[in-house]
Image (tube, rainbow, N blue to C red):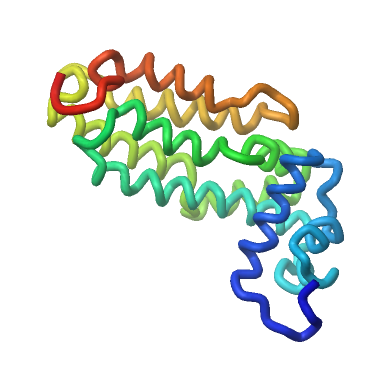
Length: 204
C-alpha cells in the first residue's frame, strides 16, 4: 500500500490497469472504488481525489482512454504499409481494443447513464474514437492498395467501416465469460481483405 502523502507516478494508468484486472477476473459487479484502489495498492481515497465525479467519471475516462490508445495505434498503420500482412496489421488494431476487459468496460459504461453521457459528449467534442480509427484504417488500406497488396478495386472505406463497426458491436455486446471476440474480428479481417491481404510479403 502506498504511504499517505507520497506521490504515485502514472496514477491514472495504475488505477485503470487495476480496474481492467478486476473486470476480467471478477466481472462488473466487483468494480467499486474501494476494490479498484485495493487492487492498485493505493489509499482508499485516491480514486476520488483524481476523479471528482467518482466511479462514473472513472469508468467513462477509462473507456475513452482505451479508445484513444487504439486510435493512436491505428494512426500509425500507414507506416506499416508493405510490412507483414494486411490482415495481421488490421488484426493488431482490432485486438488492442478487444483485449483484456475491453468489451466489459464498454458494456459497463452503457449501464451507467452518467458515464455513457460523458463518453458521448467527449466523442462529439473530438475525443479520439471510432471515427479516427476508421479514417486511419482507410488511409492504411489505400497505401496497401497502391502497393498492390489489395485488389485494385478494393473499397477501402467500406472495409474500414465494416471492421470498425464490427469491433464497436463486439465491444458493446460483450460480457464477462463470453467467447473471445478477437477470433470473430480476425475471421472478418481475413474475409474483408481477401487472399492478397491475408498473404505476407510483397504484391500478390
